[in-house]
Image 1: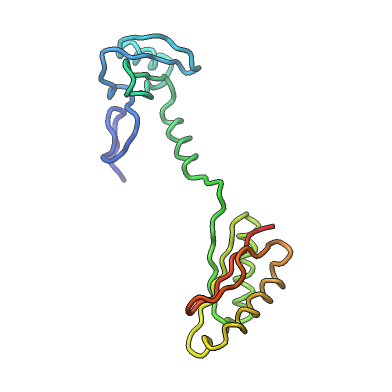
Image 2: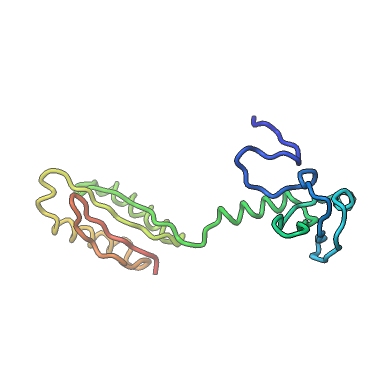
Length: 177
């Protein structure tokens, strides 16, 4: 279990806003929870006002003079900020690797995973790794890769980067239609 911190402390390395008793200025410009300016006041008055409403006093613009503080629920604000940071609007690129002689059942499993990724909106990169004598016939494996893709995922995805041979791999990028 980690060390607990009071509202006037933060963990080392955190770049968070100053809250409640960490605000050390003689006067503050205060904004209430509805966004209305309450004017310039003493920090003790502002903290008392925030406590009275069951909220926190949070410094939102420390560089302005006097610093701007807002009365808000700091825990809720931190939660919303972390939630916004974790959700990404851009699709991820998922990589599925296999070999030319991967068994039918294993290949079906990999293609069903690719289908799930595509239905979720992610892009999928197929990478075929060749070893030994397999490296002598790259055109055969390119054709095989295209055939498997057309058969399994042709109706829900399209090829954005056609199969290309680079060293010991053949790769192809696919995105949902």
